[in-house]
Amino acid sequence: MRQRHRLRRASIVAGAGLALLSAAQPAAAAAPTDTVFPVPVVWIGHTATNLPTGDINYVTASTDPAMPGITRFTGTPYTVHWRNLSTGAAGTVRVEGPSVEVHTGSGPVVATVTSGGVAFFALTLLPGGGAWMVP
Image 1: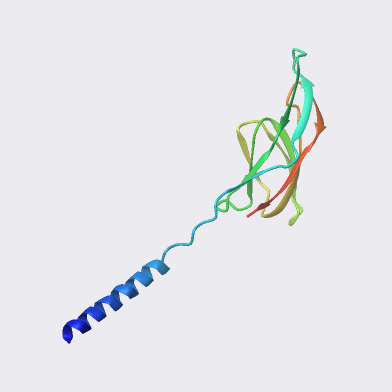
Image 2: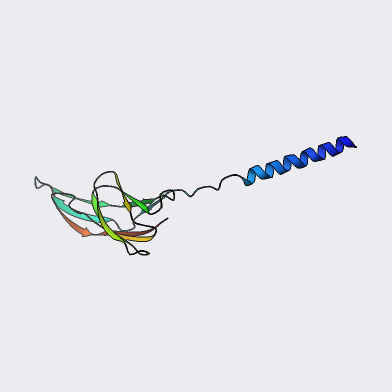
């Protein structure tokens, strides 16, 4: 009879330990989010040597819950004009490198994108645009 009680106690203790370990697991963190603007920026122009140029660029805004209030813009050179709809904060940033981080604040953010002097002379035919949520 004692053997049975020991086995029962051991299984209860093991079950309680397993329950505590599984409850102590950290919650999964939210993954970073990339938002590709649905409207691309379309531009034409010419370079310093008067060669014609132009392009259609889709802009990406990336957010990460580990960095609240920050948006990273990536892509080819362009100018982003953004506004946070929750706070009213607004700004303009020139994206020239692979990416630029901007403090947009948390909440819904909207933006328009222009060529912003991609070439020696550039004319934006269609400004790009998009909206995303910043954690």
